[in-house]
Amino acid sequence: MSKKKGNKQQQQQQDDEDIQALASELLPLVKSAVEEGAAKELMVHLKGIDGVFQLTVIPSSGNEKGKGTWHAIIKGDKVPPQIVEGPTEKKPTVWITLDEATLLKLATGKSNPVALFVGGKLKISGNIMLAQRLEAAFKRAKGYEKSRPFVMQFVELHPSLKSKL
Image (tube, rainbow, N blue to C red; front, top):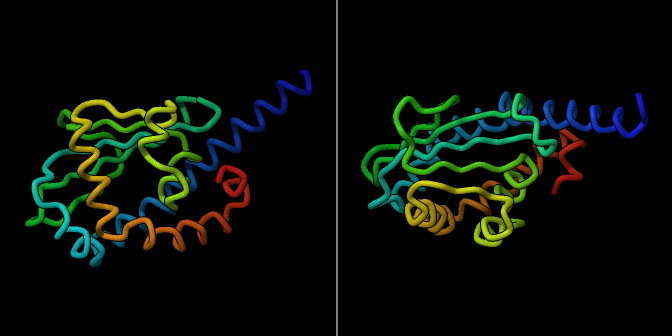
């Protein structure tokens, strides 16, 4: 096996491990934070946002086998949002697809979602206007500022992710 092919396989394996770390550690913590009170701070900004947002994170290697999928059910400002691992059984209102590096950059506020979308790093289909409204609500709730220390701490525990920021 050539060195280049071996490096590609190692990178693919590392990307898959990074996705698994996101799936098994980071996103469950986000879910817990939402369920334990962060939702209350966000909810006041969710008025008029009603939909199912499906998030698929694909390894940077592009290996579809290592992808992780979650969905959020948001019903305005009266019901706390739900974050569920796995694809939704209903047709999502918005589909969001990105790699783990892009997810980390978004979660820390290091990248602009519009620039990522225009650059093809962030794929959004379905009701794009609703996705923009959700992002605006997240900003108003100071979501980037609140998530940045948490995500950076997570990245410190997984040094391979550091290079992706």
